[in-house]
Structures are given as structure tokens and as C-alpha cells.
Image (cartoon, rainbow, N blue to C red):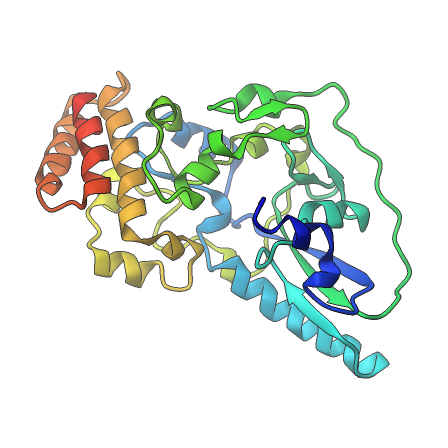
Length: 306
């Protein structure tokens, strides 16, 4: 974020001549998702929990294509104009822009909240050189609630509206290219890609809307896969099954790193039955000799938990 602070503070550096930002949202909650089931899976250490947004197709591609079509529709009505579309694809302060555009208010977990759809939506933007009317901002509606702060496994929400990304499981399992810090591994539990806890607990997500797009329906059983099943994937299977998925971007090594931590937590948990522990221990041991140094370090940590 520091590297691109100038771009974040001035979108005109990204799109010279831009004077407005059209902000949009699109619901992503898979049709089969159920928050009660999500909590149950988090309590079962043998299960692999993938953040709900990542179980379908890569939202970057889906939303960017739709934004491009939207811009072309505008062009048909007003004539040629300067624009560029974005969805989590450039150093834009997306949530803050969406808040200013009236799409919601900033929750204490720093995500955008909307009274009609909670927080389970993606954001996208079109920077334009047309001086469109400006929408009104929404009032905040979090009140005294701090459920998201209390539920965070790693206490990454350090104060209302303040997030230490270095502690956040979503950052640790997706953006962090190095070893998972030891002090956060146990808190990760069985979360192998992202974390939804602060959204699952949020009262406003009782209004979360299911997506009507088949693109966001879960693929390859990611909503109910076990750790052992995902660990059994070869690198070619990982590449093939995550084709068109946001998960593919982290690569096979980081995927295995995350799974190894979760498997270590399963070995350490009294909730894991003896048969599963034996299978997990064997699977980790079998993979150790051929693992790269990053994955091997996490496998060794996991085996010590048994």
C-alpha cells in the first residue's frame, strides 16, 4: 500500500482526465451457502474451509467483463467518452470510493456494509471523464456492535475501523508469499484460503443476498471438501481444477503451505478422531521428502502437533 500511496490518493494518476468514479456492487454468495453450515464446518478440524467468495469463478474476470459491457452501453447513449474499468485490479481505494458513492457504510471490520445486502458483494469501478451528478453518502448503522472485532481469530481488527493486515488470515493465506508466522498458525484453524468470520458474525448479513450468477456457484466441492481430499491433489490437478478461479493465483506451493497448517491444527485438536489423525499424519509424512523448503517447514511444524 505504501508503494502506491500516490495512486491511491489520486485516481487521476491512473486515468488522466478522470473526474468521476461510477461504483457498482455485485452479490457473490453461492446459492448453496448457509451461514449455520459454515460455522459447523469451522468447528470440524478435518474439513477445509475456503472463503465463500473464492469457491466459484474468478470475480476479477466476471465483474471486469460486466463493467466493460456497462461502459459500452453508456457510450451508446452519450457518445464516446474516456473511461477505464477496475475491480480489485489497481491501487484504488475501492471501499472508500464505494462509501462516498452511497453504496453503503464502512463497518468496524473495514468492509462495506449495506442495509439490503450485508457485505457479501464485490466492488467494481469505472473511472470516467464525464462530470456526472454525485450521489449522497449513507449513514452508518453499526451502533455499539463489535461482534466482528470480538470474533476475529487473530485479533486483526485492532480497533473499530482499523485492520492490521499482517495479522489477518485472508492476508496470511493469500497475499503473504512467505512462511505463516508461527504465532498465527493455531488461530488459523482449518481456514485454508481466506477467512469469513467477521462477515459470518455480522448481524447485517442476515440480509445477504444469494448470487443469481452461475459463475459464483461453488466448483469442485470447495464448500464441503476435507483437508485430506485437497491435500491429495497433484500440482496438475490444482492447476486444472482452479482454472478460472482466484485461488489459482497463489500457486500450488502456498496452497500446500496453508493446508499443512490446517492439518497440523487437526492433529492437535481433540475433536479429530484417531482414524483421521492417522491418515493426516501419514499424508504429511509421505509428502515431506518431496516438498519444497517452504512447504516442508510447515509440514514439520504440523507433524510436531501430533
